[in-house]
Image (tube, rainbow over all chains, first blue to last red; front, side, top):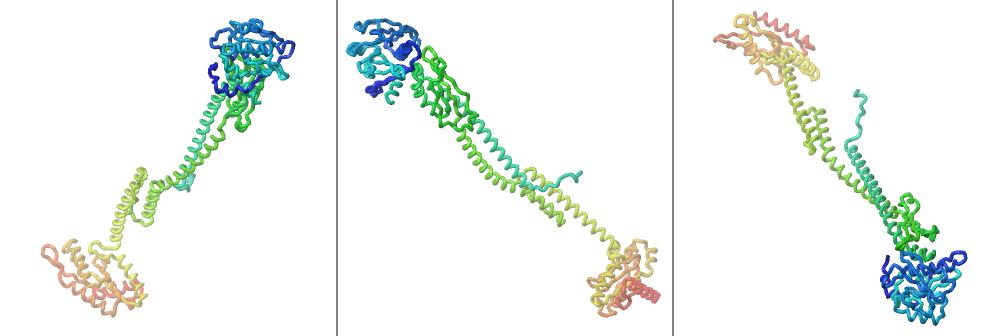
Length: 177
Length: 397
């Protein structure tokens, strides 16, 4: 397992202006997009590391939208488990959360939560920021091609949460194309 | 049986050189084979190891993309590995069985060598806790062309060197084996052709050939000794056949032969010669009175006294018993012959000393025949001389 410390600052600086994106196929059938969104959240979480790593990661979901409906507790690809708490957006950032997931928050609300989470060990994911400019670390949206995943590298660089460089590399590929 | 044996017609130098060349070519071929076999074995092993390594790296690179379920990202992640040396194809399969990407390497070696490809390698793509997919790599054994080219170049170089060494060896063979053998053969041939047995084969640097030379030489020595003994024996036999042992003069056979020669010579040169027939008077009496030893002494003395009277080239011979013959070449006149007869008779006047102070006088009756006056062949001449001798004998009685 690669150390998250391998993500050196200079690389992040170079990538700061980029808008990386990842897409994955959406399964057919009702709720397919929600399931794909839930899988993408799990994948991002699986390749994220907190300063005080435990065997469980707490996902705090607020302002739910259709895409956040399938986010549920379960095992991650790396063996850790997730647990899910539902909060109101105004209560965030709440203690005990490792990941903040906003389904349908306004830009102002997102910016407030992003500022409050900055420099802390919090991974912030938004489903309501297609251009990913409100300061949340990761933004997931649905497109014709499938689920798309963007990283705000400024936010990623400021956060105490470290994302595996391979995730960033996928984003870098997107940024080039 | 010996007829069935083939006659050798290949010379040693050629045979040895050919053997050397054959050994050289075989050695090079064996080395080439060994190098190729080892090289291919190592290359295959190396290719297998490298494939394993590339597969692990590809699995690591593709892991996140597989987890994100992004086929394009998977393709991008593994494409760099697909173009690396020794890889023919690389495929990534999701854990649910879906093929996510397959990349082929256009640079892989020609399919001609594909039978040498190592077994495909499959490596699981794992996160910390679960397998999310599989990387399968079909490898190519690369460097076969380089190996072949290099090996062949080396083999040709080695052949060239072997050829060069062969040349040197050839020259060495000529001086150490073939040359000495030829010298021995030449020596033997000379000895045989010229019956010259005091020649010797030179010593050789190689023990077996040197032994041969030594043996040939000692055989030649033996032949030489044997030949010398033969010559001695021959000479003795010739002497015995042509000479009378008691008087040391030629015998009757030899005398007749020389008279024959003299006739031929004189006939050709229109020359004259004479033969004298000498017969002892009362010789039997001497034998009876004084014994055989005395008789022998008388015969020897007569021979001794005749010899100094004759010129070099003239012949005195004992014809048997108390008979002697003399051949006088090249007569100027018939008087030459009568002069010789006179001097012989004179020489006989002195008594022959015998044992115990005794002595006896030898009387000789001498007949002369002159060629061609008295006969033109041996028999006629001898008859004439014989008659003349008896006439002389009767005259003296």
